[in-house]
Length: 436
Image (tube, rainbow, N blue to C red; front, side):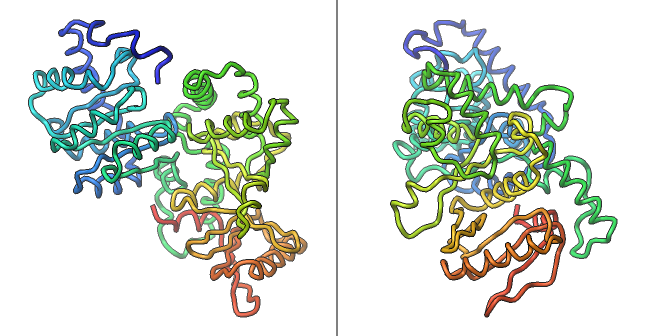
């Protein structure tokens, strides 16, 4: 929500009728003229959801491309088909759900009758779910974006149960990154040596720069730093009324400096002197809800062990991790693991790490497909190869895994262990093969 008490400002009293018409017309024109960029893979999911009457809710990090994808959708619908509203516009400060009827009347006066709403950053409106539900019942279709997972989820449950289709939008996938750069030659199953070299070089760049479109487009500008500060101060500190902003900054820096690492909330509390584990837990939840990072738990049949064991932290974007975090070395192995997590997270929320009886750690376990995945920079070192294979051997004694995969720098022949095979795949080629 905006940084004020909603009841202190009556929105429609701040603007004349002509001013409101100007705001709405300007927003509509700017949105229609927006650079559509490359077509996002998730646009297919949005279009599939157009056939059902549910509200389509697109959530994700600020500047991740939600508005751009909505603009792509708008151009498939046609300019005369929808109303557009952007509640990130500071001219909407004070707007509340009860203002929706007046707003709708003005939209009809300007644009005529339409049955589709496209709305950006709806979490800035207190009580938004009330007017969305009411208009859905009247036969309207909504395409909505938002940047706070917790707020959106809470309203889904309270007012839009069974009437919404949630879609998560991430930074560019590796495939989208290549398309953004105009590198579209990597389509055959059998890549040439030159193509493999180019693909590896592109992965190195993607690992360093990440997948935030504006940061890739304008590398000379501090876009990632600004984005991070906006989320920290506007979306978290201001929204939740946090007084100890310094502690939030220190926690964010610590987590961004330790991607793909196990962290103990109790040790973080002591290291950063945050007062209580509850404070650490709350702050990390705020960071997750604002899409800056993710946490994964250990896979264990004991509920208590799942709760008390260290969590693993992953950043939403490796470019953001590189920009914000403090690193004495390139930290390539951890960034690769972070990258693989993001690709897996695009497909499923059920992702765990695993610790075997003999103390080996498996990077990812996906219970839905019973898949174990290890990530390593390369398998050329005999000690590394032996460690990764032994970890897999030990892991299948812990869980009934059917798919064993090691992601590294090159494809290799499968390695047989008992009645199972470990597949070894090139990271960049595996990334290309994943469903969009």
